[in-house]
Image 1 (cartoon, rainbow, N blue to C red):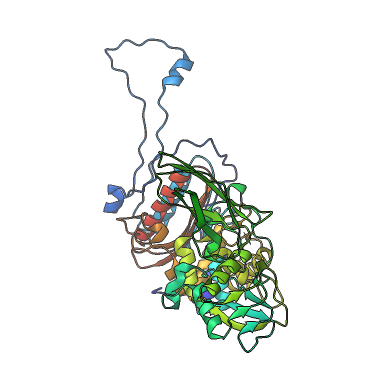
Image 2 (cartoon, rainbow, N blue to C red):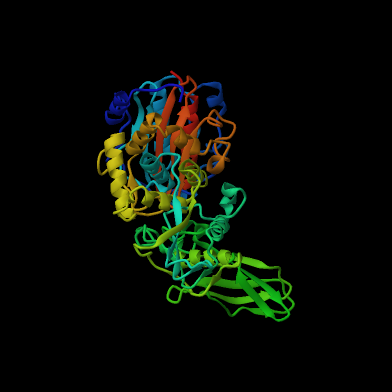
Length: 551
């Protein structure tokens, strides 16, 4: 940030509304939602030229004088009356604080006919509140919850922190390298234990790197089992408030302290002259895969169902594939991540000639287990950048629980919420009760935040040691990640940095933007309702308006 404001001045601005701050009306009654029209945001010619954007009024067409008037029943006349057009959504170029306030208020009031808005904008350069509307309303944040998760994790660990997955042995090692017992993979909530992070270990996949380290430790055989230990986190794998329809989607994978490939398995199905060939897409050893897939002649289609049985933990595949079909790959959410990780680890060990006599299972390492080696994740700064750039829920859930975990406290959503509340109150000046986090990703329907708390958090991030890491992790309007296609060709492009949030009932945006006069602004835009396209267009118009603001 080019300018810094003292903590006390910024805190005062956030707690006390500025004179003339727009207030919400408690008497406003939501009306039935109109059909949303269009999601793209356009800057009007008036806004581009610096003049105040005007609104259009739709008038009833006049009847020509030559046409005789015919009396019609009132009901029929009303039925033919054209519906009023939705108010246009445009950015403006305000040249003073009052003009900015008026335009933002007009966008809030006219963009949607139903739902609920919460908005707050503060200048961290001057320390004043530029706009507030329902600033203390408790609203669903969607993925802007990841701003809170980022901050509490960075505050707890620092940007350079690495999460370490341990390989332990529960038994002595003989001279020939045989472990007289089990080999345990103990998780520490590392979300990066996945093939796509191969670049972090000089191009080698994490599981392969771990297996190589075991070989270098001199182990040649495991007489016991390969155990996946996820005891660092609670056993609840689905956070409270996650809708049932989410649970087989890749963005709602199970939560575990020991996770691999974001807890998603891939299964390939291809036809052959001897029937359907079904296999795991990843190298796994010790997991059962049952298939009843048949091959249909003279077709290239397929109808295949893949799932994991929650009782037996077996992966099941059913349906049919055409004899002329290409190989097809299906993704399935893993119900028991610990055993899945252990199977991947066992396969990597066996591919290096290490014999495993036992099975793969989940469990906790004994207190007497000895460390063999460890795998260190990329720095937290990189994990936060991945989480916010992709809006990755799996990363968020693991970082959220880790932020509350200690040697004596198991990581959980409950302890994560308590840790977050304490951090916000003691560091960012957020009132207790202004934030409730049932999860770390924003997917839960039980999450609630206030726009003021988000702005206070972002304001604290300006002076925090990790503030630049947070800002740089956020998508850039018109340029990167979830904001790549938004606010293009406007004053916000390449300027506004923010975290997006989207569900079936929420659209939100929170972050930073530099105004035309150089002021650094923080903002929170939250909309809860069903008119998502118009609300998102209004949010983009607000972002462009802030980038165009001067005084």
